[in-house]
Amino acid sequence: MIDKYNKLRTGINISKICYAHFNSLYFESDGTIKTCGAKQYSLGKYPDITIKEAWEGETIKDLRQEMENGLFPDSCYLCKTQIKEGALESTFARFHDIDKPCVFPQIISFECSEICNLKCIMCYNNRQNKIRLTNQSNNIYNDNFIKELIPIIPYVKIANFYGGEPFLNPLYFNIWEEFVKLNPNCQIQISTNGTILNDAVKKILDKGNFNIILSIDSLNKNTYEKIRVNSDLNLVLSNLEYFLNYCNIKNKKLHLVACFMQQNWQDIPDLIKFCNKNQIQITFNRVWHPENNVLYNSSSDLLNKIINYYKTVYLEKNTTIEKSNYGKFLEIFNQTIIWKNELLEKENELKKYDNYSNNELIDVLKMCLENYNKKNTKEINYLKVYELIDELIKQEDTDNNKRLILLYYLKLPPELIYSIYKSGCY
Ligand SMILES: C[S@@+](CC[C@H](N)C(=O)[O-])C[C@H]1O[C@@H](n2cnc3c(N)ncnc32)[C@H](O)[C@@H]1O
Ligand code: SF4
Image (tube, rainbow, N blue to C red; front, side, top):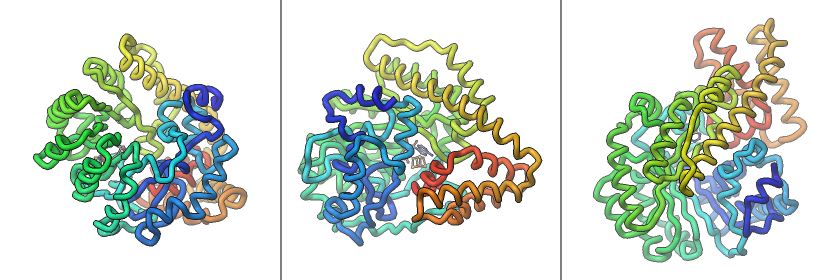
């Protein structure tokens, strides 16, 4: 599959499987600076280190060294898995394919605040009894941060703004003003839930050239509003028209993005048909977590149902956008087949625990994590990882539900449990 992936990367020197450590910086809400959204490494914390120190420090140099042999290191588990499963266009690594040497980062991503007006069920910002690895402070990113950005902005080719909700973040408005002044040709991509369209938003959109990435997980009002708690589908669809019109006038792109989950798999074909009708490109977020939403570790029965339904779906493939959207559909369809086959095996394996008590299952899970800990990742003690799972178990009131959580984690490869832990998504 790596060969197939590399064939797709035309015009790129494929000696490196990913260029994130060479061209990107990613700012998280607690100050953590990383190179990519898979969130596996920390270059240090802003403002303890400056942006320049993060970009030129020893940690990033070591990471770059690790990427020199053309393979994903073990720590890039999420991208490695996406490629193994054939989701070649949707893997994070693909977004970093700029191989021109650069003195400053060419891709900058901002996830500087968790402030949001919605409470989407899958969003790690909204986990019940949320456990973050670190505490967020609202004053980390201030005017000094913008001052540090100013010399970098003219070199940035792509700037991504995530959230919380970007249109609720005053810091972003100030950063956008600087981009408009210093680098009007930069591709600025704003990921929005589509609910905020006030005068301030319209004013900044008018001043600059922004690409809009709009999150809509279903066109079924009931399903959409169950997922995107506090949102209103009619309002978002009306705002979508404004954004579409804006992008057409400015010759910019509007993308629709949807999480592919237990709650909305039935609605994905209609969502794609809607995108085709409006000539909008769709992308799917791979949902690795939380357990109530993910498909890849759900059940083989459910995945079989999805496969049978998707087999009956017909999608147009005439225009470039329709072909791209069909390609994205095929990616999730083929992934579902792979997940189903893997789950069937795991479900059979787990039968050996049928007579185990919950306490015995806890011991087995701890042992799996400890073994992985000993062999691979010394920096995180397995008991810390188990503590987070234990929190989830405690939130369940019946023994049977506690057991389901334990079995869920026993089905996951330990490296993935550690990756999710490191990403802070619990
Ligand atoms: C965190 S949101 C921030 C931007 C904006 N608030 C929005 O919803 O588009 C960025 C993207 O992450 C997606 N997302 C939320 N929870 C996710 C999860 N558990 N796994 C994968 N993607 C997720 C959202 O659907 C959205 O497309
Ligand atoms: S709108 Fe975006 S940031 Fe807000 S809760 Fe939903 S996914 Fe999370």
